[in-house]
Image (tube, rainbow, N blue to C red; front, side, top):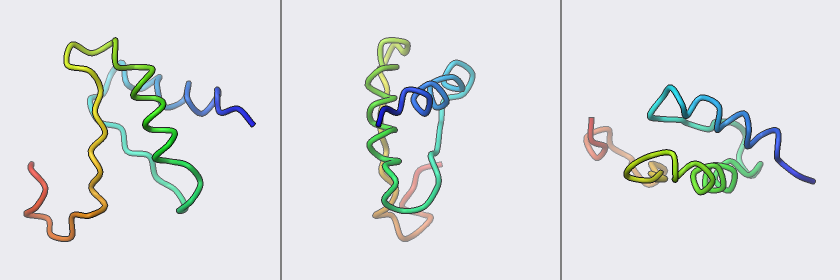
Length: 65
């Protein structure tokens, strides 16, 4: 089953925002969707698109402001 509509939905706000946080139930493919969206959008940004996995961070101080 394709996720073309989902990809379009996450790529649309990337024209106006620098950070996009997919949320939802575990195991539905948020990370895979984010990675694919970043890959497709990377050419639109001078420094590319990056995935920052914050799941391992347990303390707020471990995340830069």
